[in-house]
Image (cartoon, rainbow, N blue to C red; front, side, top):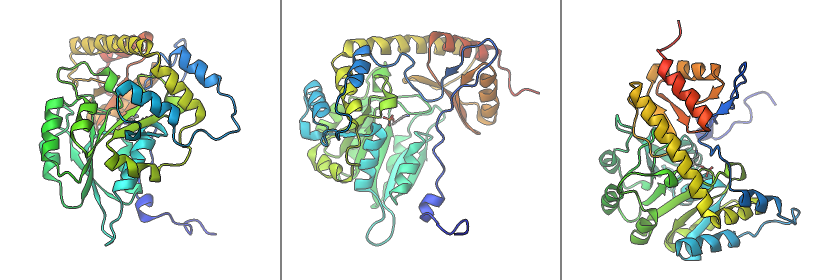
Length: 365
Ligand code: PMP
């Protein structure tokens, strides 16, 4: 057939492609570092890698209900087993929530999903693929959610609201007090997703306690992942926690066997070695402190970050900065016209990034 004959749905044709963080390019005499995907440079705890490698029966499907991981999580958080739904990364868990609650209504008009913007790049893709309409609400100049503005755009078509705390890519976290107040103003039939992908890195006062929110509000779904603090991004495993009024529906839209046996085994082992996970997180938080302090001393004004990355609001210079980083064999994540997100990496990578920020004086030429 001629090109263009096999047309995707209009909503898909109009979608931007997900632009994943790129690997670094080699440069003379420099170890390349990838600071473009908010990965954990320290990797998983050894027990998790060993558990993954020890999985037998690779010819068998995994447990369809994710029983071992859900049992471990239920015990760890003291929540009912039925309140936990696993997914292919937290992105898989989010996709289940969106496709369960938002799409094209029976009258042909779209349900609405509200989120802050800029936030996680996958949100518009997941929402629009489901046939729903995304309602992005600009973050403040400090990169924070504008919760008042988000409340103001709720309509009778709103089905889901996404809160990302800490916010990727800008960095700030919400407070428990402000989210609780927000939830008291959201209609009970609207699902509020609290995406806590970077939860473990938060060191601010009054941190969001997603589990307390889910216990208090039946319309809250907490989203968590093993990709960041646990260093298991390559295995793709995450989960949501919500009351059964929500979770009973989620399992229907999940891709069957979406969590592999290898991923499940590693996640369970990682949960059993949390002291080591926390030690790694502490190391990264220390590196974050080093980076933010050095940038402040060098005169950079950046949003307060509570995650494993920093946001440089460089506007039109974003691509130039990313190119300058590339020359130093550092892969970072530019968002054209807006800013550059740089993950906290190995100490040597962070030192090189700091040195670049000290000397960077705008676009070359
Ligand atoms: N939520 C946020 C805010 C993220 O930044 C990411 C990953 N970049 C995810 C969810 C998805 O992570 P994963 O699917 O690896 O769990």
